[in-house]
Image (cartoon, rainbow, N blue to C red):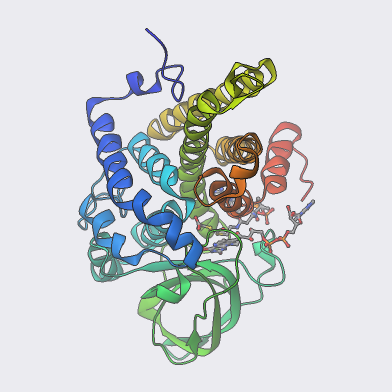
Amino acid sequence: MPLNPLDLYDVAGALSEEERMVQDSVARLVDEKVLPVIQKCFEEHRFPRDLVPELAGLGLLGSSLKGYGCAGLNAISYGLICQELERGDSGIRSFVSVQSSLCMYPIHAYGSQEQKQKYLPGMARGELIGCFGLTEPHGGSDPANMKTHAKRRGTDWVLNGSKMWITNGAIADLAVVWAMTEEGIRGFIVEKGTPGFAAPEIERKFSLRASVTSALFFDNVVVPEGNVLPGVVGLKGPLSCLTQARYGIAWGVIGAAQACLAQLLDYSKTRVLFGRPLAQNQTIQVRLADMARRITAAQLLALQLGRLKEQGRMQPSHVSLAKWNNCRMALDIARDCRDMLGGAGISAEYVPVRHMLNLESVITYEGTETIHQLTIGRELTGLNAF
Ligand code: TGC
Ligand code: FAD
């Protein structure tokens, strides 16, 4: 029997029945609701907000959290959710990553009982949208050097500064914002409409056009003590959230690569040049084989990463290696697929160029490729080159 070109090592066969059910249900959602609209959304620079109730209805928001109306799924299931969503578009996976791993996770891990009750059930239902403000205009790779700061004033805090490139910012009901205090970096929940807080959308992007990206401005924003995350102080707070989101990205980008390869396989078998299908040329087959090799390696890396996570053995360096490898794999495949489609490769009728443009962001956010390479370098040598 021929192998599945998108799953040569039968990763699907290694999944539990529940994991397969999760994957199948998200795949159906993507086929029926995302793919029919996403290209137009990308062209119109518009996030398909009407998909949020559909994502929530399937339990995809905060899916790996326990309690508070969240689905409590395992790590592999979260990975598969990201993979299927990103097969649709990185912007949809981004929305779910930010809502789940960067906004619900810190409230769940570090929030007070009141904060969890107030925000998590509404966020799981998609009625409240969250964003995560860490990056600042002067340099996102080095968040320890943040300028945004908060000072105590009586029982309140006063927040000043700005954040840049914030996914969901302009549509968010609440922002988890990381700011420097006298005690170190702390997390603040800032609600939409708080005086002095603005979240204008960043227009004119060539990438992630079906996702909202914003700046955040804080001008003497008063945040009550009850909106400070009590459970963490220091850079490890935001970095621990990034570990969760980067894990999802390592799986997600496999979906983008699979979408590109699937379309290219169809195209290259029917496109006839020099009297034979394009796919019947040695150099084309070598390039297709190389894509399958790289996708397979990425799938096995993600699967083992998921197992380490479930066993509580996953280290930040494991995640850095997988985020680096899998984003590089997906971006290279999207670019190569675009090339093998010829002129059609730049047309909105085909998916690789959209994935390629999106992946330029995905390889940059959540730690650039260089940041993850240096993290592995530090792991190998014990020497900090940052
Ligand atoms: P460093 O000394 O390494 O660490 C400071 C403290 O944090 C701990 N730590 C971690 N904890 C949990 N998870 C991790 N991944 C951690 N990495 C480090 C560490 O143990 C230490 O703890 P303690 O107790 O000793 O204080 O910090 P550093 O200043 O040297 O920085 C290291 C570096 C460069 C790796 C870090 O700054 C970094 O990752 N920079 C990249 C920043 C980044 O990724 N920003 C992403 C912004 S969010 C985003 O892009 C969302 S896009 C979402 C979407 O749309 O999908
Ligand atoms: P810089 O940090 O200025 O880096 C510039 C270049 O220098 C990069 O190539 C980098 O690799 C390189 N570099 C940095 N340090 C070194 C070094 N020591 N040695 C060698 N090279 C180095 N952030 C959030 O907080 N929340 C979000 O929701 C969010 N969403 C995003 C959505 C999109 C679409 C994008 C594009 C970004 C988003 N980000 C978000 C920001 C993202 O995390 C940052 O863009 C990223 O961390 C890089 O920061 P920077 O853009 O400031 O680049």
